[in-house]
Image (cartoon, rainbow, N blue to C red; front, side, top):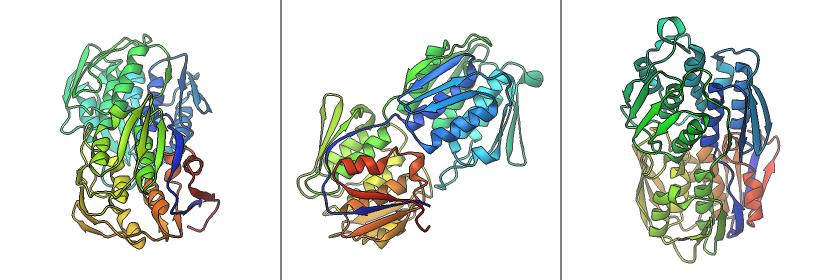
Length: 427
């Protein structure tokens, strides 16, 4: 397996361009199942998750050409409404084919999902919504088998109230509702920018989606064959942008312009970074991050958007490892998302775990070590720690990293970091 080696001590300076948002591109790729003809996605990042989704769509019968930053999806001659374990186990977002398949073809067989091992992420809210729309659902040998009304008929609009906000649940039901008869109302929806982006695409296709990005979404579906293919440029990746913001601030003297980032999608992170003593300002279509003095400890509690994103918890925790006072980081979304902490302890971090809370007492310095990445965002956090550490840090098992960060070693290297990928390093 590959590893990333980082030699710390050099503040980052320069400009980095943010790639398209993985978490927007994946549901939009799945939305291509709702129509025939050729759809074109632009500003798509070159990531393993994009390749996995393309392979899944090919298995389902689509013709897919990936030439990042563009992906073209064309309807094939035959459809196989089944997503096998071998593909779905690699990425939890694969479950997003469930809604469009059953809406378009009346049936679907989709393996229960996999992905990062950061805690239980059930799909009960997806299934509850589909049942309200007339689906018959059964679980069989690790698969969800869904069938439309009357043995594969058209879904019908319904009102669905989520027990808790769920991004993929909201997206799956939005796509299912785009071909359902009548109006569907989704209540207590996820409000992430990626959900809003999917709503824009469904409207381009001809559905009527109102309220995407708020907690109540109304969708009026179209008849079979009425949804059109689309041409769409993916929004910038706010989590990638936030990751580079933390990297820019990890050492005094850091001064980085993050090109293409949307500051209004990062308000919770920006507020906490400013409270910690980091200068964050907009410059045209970019965000400039500068750190001149010591950091102050800041308390953070993760929450659904527009709260502090769980996908930024690990990176911000590393930043607090270098602060001059104590901070408390509370994780409310996933119960197993502190797996980076034992690795940070190996690097000299002063962190105490208490249930779903990490108490961080800023260390005088971090030290280079050999550490193991456990999930996507933990991978990025360990690289950021390596930027601040004395001597060399080797981050192993970075296959997680390649699921969500495009050319991170090249981008950090362009900002002055001493960083390299080691091919085939010992795991």
